[in-house]
Length: 183
Image (cartoon, rainbow, N blue to C red):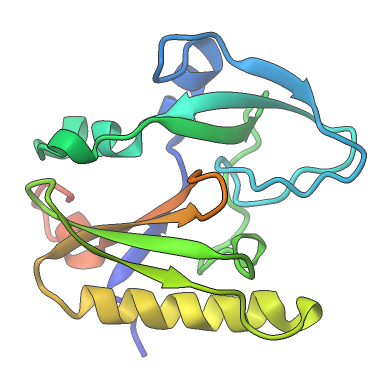
């Protein structure tokens, strides 16, 4: 099945800005990751390594999307914490849904091109711990496919449930590739 959406990490130019001042106007909080590691990185869709230096920044994905597309997220504009590498890491290593972001409780929020929220979906982890990421990926891809079956959906954001952290953005492929402004 062909997907009707593209998966987007935080763009490199935005990451450069966030490494100077985040979307709340603060300098990044530089951290050395704890002994366990495993926090999701939004720059490359990986997970932190034990002892790895990272930055914790505030990020406003809808505000950034609105500035790019002319949408008006109004009261749905949110700013929240995300982990990124301190230096440019080159971004995601491959295409497709990032396995490192699957397996935990997630919320998907769908938005119309004008910025209105169209709804959301909640996903519980699927299967035992070793099988969770593969089953979680399949479940999230299924949910995304169903959300994008609504022609009004222009973007879907994936968030972590416990902390509400933004994980990634998806956008409808047709809007990003047909010469019109992406939504």
